[in-house]
Length: 336
Image 1 (cartoon, rainbow, N blue to C red):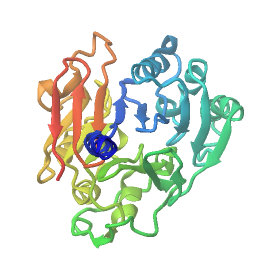
Image 2 (spheres, rainbow, N blue to C red):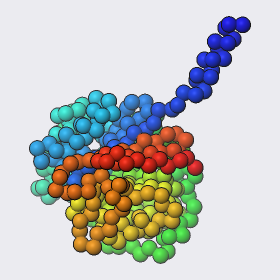
Image 3 (cartoon, one colour):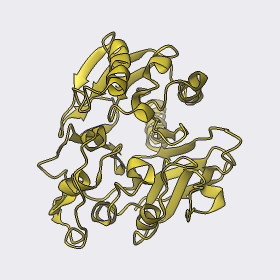
Image 4 (cartoon, rainbow, N blue to C red):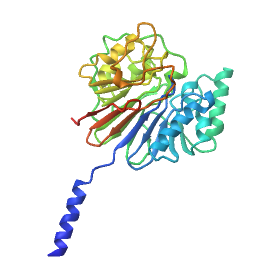
């Protein structure tokens, strides 16, 4: 009778073993982007690297978050586009952590401008030492334990809806289009990162019309749990057509003190029906700026230059927790 009892106890232990969470650090790079994603498998992905210069400030902040999560190398670096606040920190980060795979949208859309060429060449000098992949809509990043699908790249967007998406978007008709953006922003790589039932949307700096192409006349993304506000909360992006359609439970705004967080763009996010939380990397200090609750702002004082992050942990059930790195304030959003 002893062997069956041991077997039964082993099964009970297996049944109560909790799944490992996915960890996401939204790192303060002063109005740019740097997001560290750690899969339950231990593999890592960084989306953008913030600015270069500043004595390695942004690379140091990414490396500190990596160290906190036990990450010793970057398995996948996804560059959304080739602007200084997104790709500038690559050489400095590569000097601190090995980067195995580089993912981007291909040629620089702003080639021919000296500043853009210099920035791109500094990036490719590092990229060419690793494994390089050009991604397109519909591609998947093969990070073990997560489902990461590219939804926009190089000015193109998904043509087929993601599973469970594809419904007509009622918000398209009331959202006018804007003048076409002719910068790298409109070529941003956007992605949906899923872990079980949990879904996170990150569109880089994708601009207004391209966002509409993605969700109009049908919503090819569907709904998400967490929305990293597009383009730092600038009103060149983040139209009601996409924000209301993806219907996030929580939004995280990667704004700087004086960049992003435009009052009208902030209001679109704030007014999403059923929004359960709006978190900010910085207190927005621009004229007429709106801000969320103080406990949900990671860097309330722009003069301190503290570089506090916002951390997300998610379970495959759909439950997730958001924590403010400056004050420890934390809120758990139960699975639905």
